[in-house]
Amino acid sequence: MTAKPASSKLRLASAVYEGMVRHRRHEPQAHAFSYRMAQLYLDLDEVEQVFAERWLWSTTHRNLAQFRRSDYLGPATLSLADAVRQRVEQATGTRPTGPIRLLTHLRYAGMVFNPVSFYYCYAEDGETLLAVLAEITNTPWKQRHAYVLPVEDAHVHGRALHWSFAKSFHVSPFMPMDCRYDWRFTLPGDDLRVHMNVMREGRRTFDATLNLQRSPLTGASLARVLWRYPLMTAQVVAAIHWHALRLWLKHNPVHDHPAPPARAAD
Image 1 (cartoon, one colour):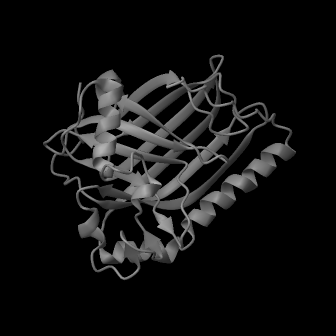
Image 2: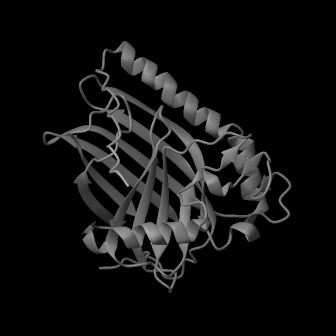
């Protein structure tokens, strides 16, 4: 199974998405928060073109906003697009040959932190989605892990693609490992929605929702990102730690970070 956007007239290329993110913890102690945010949706073949001659944006040197290759999926010896293709091929046996489009926060004022970046992997026609790769960064350890979600394994619910799978990476000290994920994605179009449930013993213990609207990526839209969200990374980090403190004050249990698996001898 493959998936295409609802409107074939929509040209999928680099864009700005802006909207709301909401987090809700349902047990053992309820807690919720939401905030506005903007993310860039970058066709990785367009990155150099997108930031060319942008005074405050760059790919090769420090700037107020910077796309830095080392902030994303390795190995860094490969281009980011090829690193994504390689990881998808390792997981599925099939290598995407079309565009790779990344939904992410860049590095702002020298700081970067992406709780999750999404790579949308397309067929050569640039419209048929083959897989989503979700690159997770945990808090506070800043380790990375990638989940590969093939579209052929998804269940379709209206506009949404739905995957359910076991959690295999420790994300937060307030969330145990013995959980399952229930994730739903709509394809990037005029809007973009991601809903992520965390299930434990058949109950939803946590959910996060990303609900964004698309704007063309232009000088004006990039300026609006810097004007409205000048300290994007600091905002995300501060929100995570502030709400972690509130969870602790509500006596939510803290789960130890599991030791990394032992490496086999060479």
